[in-house]
Amino acid sequence: MENGSTIAIDGPVASGKTTVGRKLAHRLEYRFLDTGGMYRAVTVVALNKKLDLGDQDALSRLTEEMPIEIVASPDGDRLIANNIDVTDRLRDRDVDQNVSQVAAVRGVRTALVRQQKNIGARGSIVMVGRDIGTVVLPDASIKVYLDASVEVRANRRHLELQSAHGTLSYQEILQDLVNRDKIDSERDVTPLTPADDALILNTKELTIEQVVDSILNEMESR
Image (cartoon, rainbow, N blue to C red; front, side):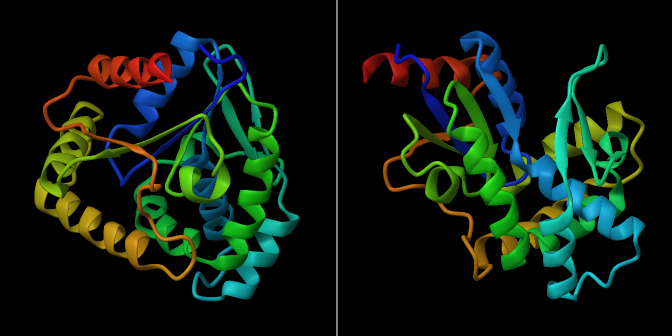
């Protein structure tokens, strides 16, 4: 297997990117970066500051000036944004509802993509997001696009939230994913789309381990 490979994993919300990426990075002993967490961190800080999320200039300035770092802890990695630990806020409902809008802002994406490219340049990393294979790591050793129908993804998210004592109904989650897919796929700046040379995997009938094995097999065959 190639030493120092970069692996780009893209796909829509709840397609399994983060879980697959973490397991793959663990198997390979690579670093792991979920770029979605960076957009969520910006959203948390913007909400805390009560910024108008329709003010693209304000969001862009905030992101340009905001340090974001991942800090290891006994309980797992913690995400520090603007010198505040925002980890426990990343999956809150208000963040879920607004992150796609924030991530669609050109200045926000430009600032964060710059950081992501710098991180990826060191190699030996699995990076997941919406535009990794197309924009952040266009020369990645392996590009993967994970997909599943919005109904399948909504059911997964519903089960996850139920296990965490969530109160949202399946229909609420489904509508939320439909809205977020629309924003992600239709935004002017780097819309969600598979890279031309990506390995496309529909995860509906696959376990996490089967998806990871498929990616490893693809790496071995190249």
